[in-house]
Image 1 (cartoon, rainbow over the protein chains, first blue to last red):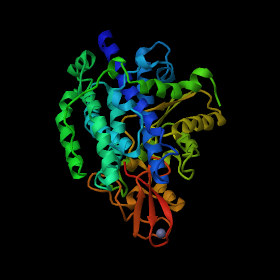
Image 2: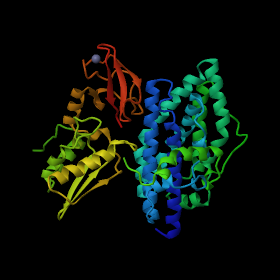
Image 3: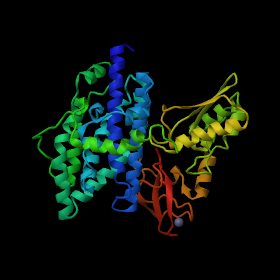
Image 4: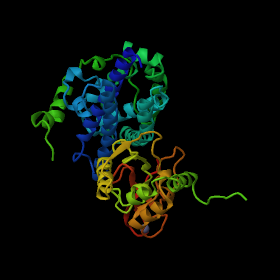
Length: 254
Length: 179
Ligand SMILES: [Zn+2]
């Protein structure tokens, strides 16, 4: 692996790890706040899947970096400007409709992305993706069912679901944007060219939303910046909570 | 005369690997390492024990996680090391292998029986949906055998299980999902 490709792959692994870690943390915030016990447990399971993925991506990043940093260093010792997750992942959990709509938008995305990443020329990235594919199929079934129920539910649940959708839509475009780093890797068959996933994603999401009697938002605005470390204020608060113990009690074991 | 193995291809392949291993005694030894979540199942039964090699005095055990975030993997790693140390194998390492991804097909027939007896329906006790996911009903109840059951939650006590309720005996039970 040339140094350029190695550095780019390291950055890519960190991005994928950051997406999984930040979203996993957001989902875990539902634990003990779920609307009923089964949902609470479902959230805990989905959060664990993401945190497991984050560990695998960070583990690979630490192998590539080869500078003594561990997966914990990637998770706990970087500040918000060093985190390169998509902004969509860091938005606060909101109400139940908001979290399920976000999950649907992301689950459809991963169900398209992971099978492609599983064909990556990078064996480790391919193995992590292959492991995650079936999990994301289960995630999607759940978020799809909930969006159908909430969208096509009561007046109140419909209103909240549509509001969540309208406020999240502008954050979805970032999923399908490629910068130089990812372009370079995509040309080498390592990264997934996400610009090619957008049409199919839009088709599948629209079909579910329509079935849920929700209107598909117009592409009126788009927010971006996560991939280069420009975040909303929400990430700082999230990291404060996530990193507190690790930073306050370095090396603490129990 | 050709032999026709009356067992799933995957399990046959695993048995062959075990039987032809140069360290058969270590496979037997690691039968005592159980899944901390389902203590009747050994890591062999579950199919997460992938390989055991000896290089001189050094033992290398390869395991694979069921789900990406399976919290049991750290405990299992420690238990494997402890089991080896207890028998005097002091030089050892446990490798985590992701590919090929674990499949519920890898569970041994013995493991499936033990699971049912333990009160968890094994993967083959329900017909998967078209997309290979858990059905909404009719997983066989491990308590009374009824198929009059319905899915309560896709996610049970752990990511690898779904929660069902039996309409016949009214008990709830975990179903080990196909993956
Ligand atoms: Zn029953």
